[in-house]
Amino acid sequence: MPATNEPIAAVARACMFGLDVVPRLRTAGHDCDVMVISAAREAEAVRAAVRRRVADCLLKPFDVEDLRERLARYRPRRGDLAAGTVRGQADVDRVLGRVAAPVAAPTLPEGMSVETSELVERALRAADGTLSAAECATRVGVSRVSARRYLEHLTVTGRAEVTLRYGQAGRPERRYHRRVP
Image (tube, rainbow, N blue to C red; front, side):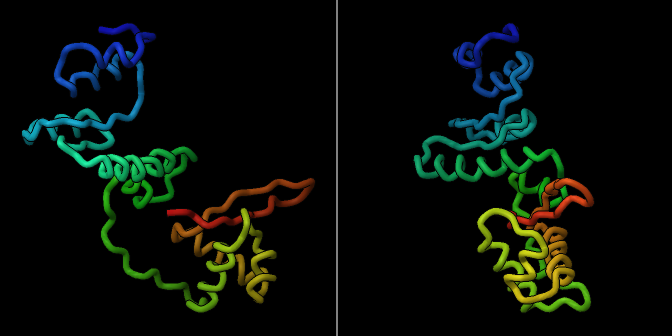
C-alpha cells in the first residue's frame, strides 16, 4: 500500500485496473472526488464505480464537449456542501447528481399573493449582494413585516438563503440573497 504522503500521480501510475486506483487513494488518505473515464462497457464495471463513490463516469470514446459539460455540472455539486448544512432532500439529491422529480409549483401560505411574491423575488435577484427585509420593503413598496414574510418563504422553499449580520447591540440583522441553482 502507498504511504499517506505518496503523491496521487504515483498511485495512478501503478499498473492496475483503473478503478483499483480509487480504494488505494482512499487508503492513502486522499479524500478526493474521482471521475472515471473508461472504455469498459460491462455493467459490473459501472456498479464497481458506484460502489467506489465516483463522482461521474464517462465512456470512451467521448466528445470533449461532453467532458466540459460534466465538469461544469460537477462544480456546483462540489460547492453545495461547503456550507456544512443540508436544508432538505433536494440538497442531497443535487449533491449526488440526481435529477429531482418535477416539483409542483409551490403554493403560497394563506394571505400571500403570487404577484407580491414575484416582486420580492425580482428585488432579491436585482440586489447587488444581500438585502434586509427593510430594504426589500422599500424597493417593493410593502411593509417590512410583509417583505420579511415573503423572504422567509423564499428561504423555506430553497429560492433564497439567509445570513446573519451582527451589529453593536440587539438582534442580528437577517440578510437575504438569491440562491443560485
